[in-house]
Structures are given as C-alpha cells and as structure tokens.
Image (cartoon, rainbow over all chains, first blue to last red; front, side, top):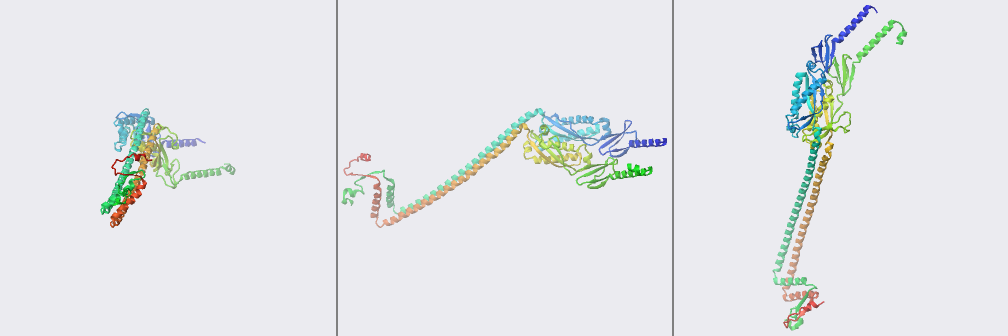
Amino acid sequence: MNRSSWLRMGIGVLILIGLCRTFFVVDETQSVVVTRFGRIVREIARPGLQAKLPVDQAWRLDKRLQVYDPGPAQLLTQDKKMLQVDAYVCWRIMDPERYVRTVADTTMARRRIYDLVRSQVAAELGKVELAKVISTQEQGLQLEPMLQTVTLACRSAARDTYGIDIADVGIKRLVFPEQNLESVFARMRAERQRIAKQYRAEGEQEAARIKAEADKEKEQILSEAYRVAETTKGQGEAEAARLYAAAHSADPRFYRMTRTLQAYEKMFGKDTTIVLSGDSELLRLMTQGRGANR
Amino acid sequence: MKVSADTGGPGSRARLMRRAIWLLAALYVLSGAYAVRPGERVVVRQFGRALMPAGPGLHYALPWPVCRRTRVRTEQPRRATVGFAAVDQSVGASVDPRLSRFLTGDENVVQVQLVVEYTVQEPVPYLFRAQSAQRMVEVSAQRALAEVLAGTAVDDALTTAKAAICEEVRKRTQFSLNNLKVGIHVVSVNLPAVEPPAEVAADFQDVASAKVDYHRIINEADAYAAETVPKAKGEASQMTAQAAGYKVKVVNEARGDAAYFGKLRAERARAPEVTDARLYVESMERLLPRMRVIVADESGNRPLDLSIVRDQP
C-alpha cells in the first residue's frame, strides 16, 4: 500500500470514530445527560437518535420505575404500640440533571429515599392510634390516607431536592414485632378459648330453650287432652244420670228395691257371715209355720 | 473458497466477492421481517424509541442497529406470589412463616399466602416503564393484602370473607398498578392458604370444634323436641279417644239399664205384690248359698252370743 491509501484509510477511521461519538441512541428506558468538560450542557428525556459534539460525554441513566424495599422497621403509634412496618417505595429518576448533581448513583439515591420515607412514615404513624391503623370498622381506617400523605410529602421533597419522582409509598406488611409476638399469641389464645366457651354455652342455652319449649308444648297438649277427655266423660256421666233419673223416677220405690237387691248381690260373698233372725221375712215361714205368712 | 481458487483469476474472484456481499446485504435486509403469533405482540424500538406494537401477522422492521424487537406474550397468564419466597415454588411448600404473617383488623396475626395472576395489557409500558413489572405486581398485591387484612376480622379472614378479600385485593392491586402505569391487567387473586400461626393453631381448632359442638347440642335438643311433641300428641289423642269411648259406654249402659228397668216396671205394674216377692226371694236364693248363714231365734230377746261366729272353721 502507498502513502495516500494509508492516509485515506486513516481519515476514514477518524470520520467513523467522529460519527460514533456524535450520534447516539437514547433508549425508551433511559434519560441522558450530556456534559462538556464536566459541565452539564443538555438533558435528553425523549428516546430516539440524538447528536452531540464529539467531545461531549453522554451519561445514561435508567429512568424506569424501581422498587426500593428497605426492609422492616419498628415504629411506634400514637398510643405507644410498637409495630413492625415493612414499607416500600416505587421511584424513578425524573430530573436527570438534578439527580446527577445531587445523588449521582443508585446506592446514594436509596439512602436519601430511605431517610426521607422512614422519617415521614414514622412521623405519620406517630400521629394515629393503633385502632385507626388496623380496625374492623371500614370508615375508621387511617392507613391509606396516611400513606397518601406520606407519598405526597416524600414526592415533593424528593423531586425538588434530588430530581427523583416517588410514584408510590406503600406498606407491604404490617405485623407486631417478633419480640411482642409471644404476648400477642397469648392474647389470641385467651380470646379463642373465650369464643369456644361462648359457642358451647350458647349451644347449651339454645338446647335448654328448645327442650323447655318442647316440654311446655307437651304439657299444653296433655292438659288440653285431659280437659277434653274429662269434659267428654262428664258429658257421658251427665247423660247417663239423666237417663237413669228419667227411668227411675217413674217408680222410685220399686227402683230402690231392685237396686238394693242388686247391691246385696255385689256386697256379700262367700266370706260373709250373716246372722238372720228367725223372725225375718225370709225365714218366718220356716220358723213360725204356715200361719205366720199372713 | 477452494472452488473460486480453482476457477481462476482475480476478476472472477472479485465478482464472487461482490455476489457474496450482495447476498449478505440481502440477508441482512430480509432479517428485518418477523412474524407475530396470536396471543403475542412485538414491540419495535427504532433508535430506542418504541413504535406501536404490531398485532399477529407478518411485519417488517429495519434490522439492528436501527431497530430492536422485543417479543411479549400478552395473553399468557403470569404469576406473582405473596407470603412465600420463590415464584417457582409450588403452593404449600415449606415457607418462612415470618414472611407470610399479617395483622388483622382485630389485632390478630394470620399467615396468608396469595397468588396473583396477571396478563400484559399494554406491552410498551410493561416493557419499559418499570425495571421489573413482576416486582411491581408483587409489592402492589402484598400492599393490597396488608391493607385489606388490616380492615378484616380474623374470623372472617379465616372463613367466610376469603372471596371478598380476593376481590378487594384484586381491585386495589389493579388500582395501584394503574397508578404506576405499567400496563398490567390483574386477572385473578387467590388465597391458597389462610391460617392461624402454628403457635395458636390448636386454639383456633378448638373454636372450630366448639362450633361443631354448638350445632350438635342444638341438634340433640331438636331431636328431643321432635320426639317429645309427637309422643305427647299421641298420648293426647289416646286420652280423648278413651274418654269418648267411656262416654259411649256409660250412656249406652244407662240406656240399657233404663230400658231394663222400664220394661220390668211395666210388667210389675200388673202384679206388684207377686213380682216384688219373686224378685226378693230369687235374689236371696242366689245370695244366701254363697255365705254362711246363722239363724238366731230372737223370741226370748236374749243377746246373741257371737262366739259361735268366731268358732266356726
């Protein structure tokens, strides 16, 4: 190869390097900060093909949302109850220039966010009672409004100071601290025992009521039946008495005689010893002879 | 290249080179064609900027370095889990219990596992809005779960409210994800496990058996009632039937007696003296042979010596 072709080749390589240092691609996921000799000259948030001076530096920043999960913290509520709060933060870089100037890298950013969120959550949680954080009454619950307040406060602070957008602050787990759990379990156990006892007692109570009800109904039925039965019997007796009276009153003396004779036959059996006077009507014929009969 | 070397001079070699270059260029241009299958989208980034994702069919985008393609299966359900660590772990496998403990509204602690199924609704935000959309789903779902449980009583969470919790968690997760604009649609939320912590499981079990006892005791009482009342009713109808029978009997007997007396009296009226005497004597005839009769002569008016009665065998 001769000199001119070397020269041509050298120029070509230089042009290629120049092009590579001039044009650059900004990805959908990135923001780019362009610096010239260390001074920020431009920030690019829109993706696409961009150009800069070959001497400029392009700093690529990941502008996607990321989750920062600093791990559980033990915080106090207003009524001095200790809670283990597991907060997380969704954040992204919003103002690359400010971000680069103030925090520069993710580790630092996380530390800043941690300080900010931790203190905000602690402050807000310290303003409410435990009964407002967790409650079975829907309207009393302060957890969400509290988090909204925290998010808004953190968002404006982080945006103005660090160029970071805090999209969301949430509490992903809420539990009593490990060291308090034993007493919590003891309380739960006592509560369960109370509920179990109550169920059984209520069962007994209900059963007693059902049985008493049944017994009452039984007595009602039986007494009603007794009333009806006795009435019927009485009617029968009354009817009989009327019939007897009607028949007998036609000849009371004759009735008395026949009835007495009937009674005799029922009254006297073989165990009876009777002493009859020889003078009696029955025996008079035997003891006094035929003449006595008249 | 052996062949080209054999066939001769530099002219033909240069021609071959040119052809090869053209072929490579054609291949390079053709490599921009791509097919999109049903149930997926392909997102093309042209110089880093995302274009509208193409639907199923054959498409073309300039090859690298101008364009980059990313394939997303939008209809494939994806899974995120809460309360157990690994995504690929089967549900119910051993987990760190501390990861799955949550507070309920009545200050109890429950262990909950949650599975979220989601699909990609908008591929562009899904791919580029967050570093890990999966992680966004996980934290959003867990946060929703913590919030919902903080408003639910432990008994409801363990029994009746599971479906309601799932629905509420789904809604809140979707709400959070919508706010974060990550293009995800939450299909379903399931609670494969809601349990009391092992430390108090026995006492929760006892409440369950107390509930069973409650129903058993009441059932027994119901059985007693079901037996007692019909029995009483039976007894009652027996009583009334007996009484009715008694009434019929008494009345009929009275009618019979009355008829008997009436007939007898009518007949006696013709000869009262004789009939009376006959009735009397017949009665004595039947009566006296059955008993011991002592005839005492009272003509002397002496008191009767009753010792004779006693001495008889």
